[in-house]
Image (cartoon, rainbow, N blue to C red):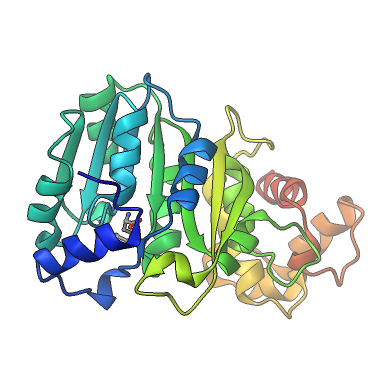
Length: 286
Ligand code: SAM
């Protein structure tokens, strides 16, 4: 099968199967061989690797992955794509396609079965409507992974990479940076896809930290603090955290801990680094 990264080949497959794009599944298929090569290069795939691909579509990137990896597992929600994938991937015996919603798959079990529990790489041109739940699900479920190399909406890639003091900084930046080192690898314009998305895209690589960069007594508590701080972005931390019912902490306690940290009593969460949130959480729990 000729490369589907060449637009004419993708169009032929779509016509052969009379395929109808499903907006609800975020279907924008890549039709640019240089972007595909960039993704594979950034993911540093070798013949030792077991790769999980989320949303293979008609198998465009899957073909590249099958060429470079030892084993590829591709999870696709749209059952109309399954016969197409059987056709476009027929030349490869190292690809398993699973017709499932990725949010319902037990990925830990999959890694156990396919890679004897050793760390996998995730590579995907993600459906943009569920980018955050997919990424957070991968990190929080403790799936053994080396890296996640994904195409996401440009704005979301920016949010993952920035630090305090920028408008894009928020709970997603802190969560991603707690688990991984983010690096934007490429910006990708809408004309590299069929159909064209309404937004710009970017490829970002998240390399999993061996150990988180900060020590926290209770991760869940720190993330609850982070979420509460950014839910009420315009409030000071004393007011924002003191009002958050689920945290069970008084304004006086927050003020006392901020003083101990040498922070102003009117400080806002958007100025806090990951280290600051870790310390705040540890001190509130002590
Ligand atoms: N990888 C292909 C490519 O690059 O051309 C397709 C990428 S397209 C942006 C996203 C793909 O994810 C679609 O094939 C879509 O059907 C699939 N998808 C959407 N939601 C999904 C879910 N919850 N679980 C698994 N696949 C999903």
